[in-house]
Length: 144
Image 1 (cartoon, rainbow, N blue to C red):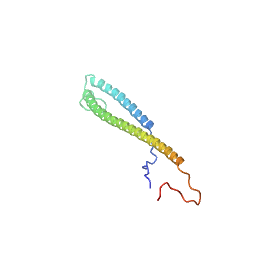
Image 2 (tube, rainbow, N blue to C red; image 1 turned 90 degrees about the vertical axis):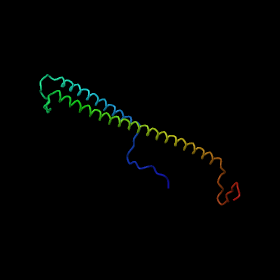
Image 3 (cartoon, rainbow, N blue to C red; image 1 turned 180 degrees about the vertical axis):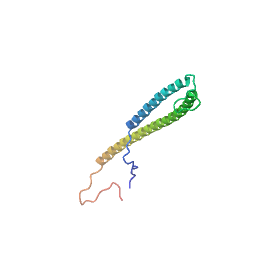
Image 4 (cartoon, helix red, strand yellow; image 1 turned 45 degrees about the horizontal axis):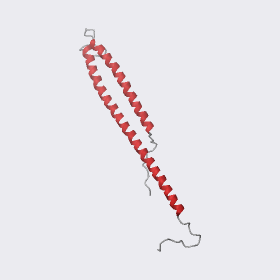
């Protein structure tokens, strides 16, 4: 009754997979930053207004400046939330990558130890006395 590895189904994650996921998250963060920058510039332009009390489409009755200010506040909040989520994902991916590298190193170390033990066992078997002929009593170095 040996210890079996946990059943992970078809889940196989390599360090390269984690690197690719981390790169994707970084590209996603850059895209979000670029998009947010663009939207904030648009809002700034709207905040300047034309001096009239004209509202933006689907806006409030408070005028373009107030609408843009409220949109700016909402965008700032959602940006902070998104950045926090992306940072958490990046941190978790980094942790997964480190864990995968540690597991791979431990596996390689165990393989090396097993190979060394196998060679030692082979040397011991080669230096051992040959087995007795058929029908002979085995001889032991020590009396029973």
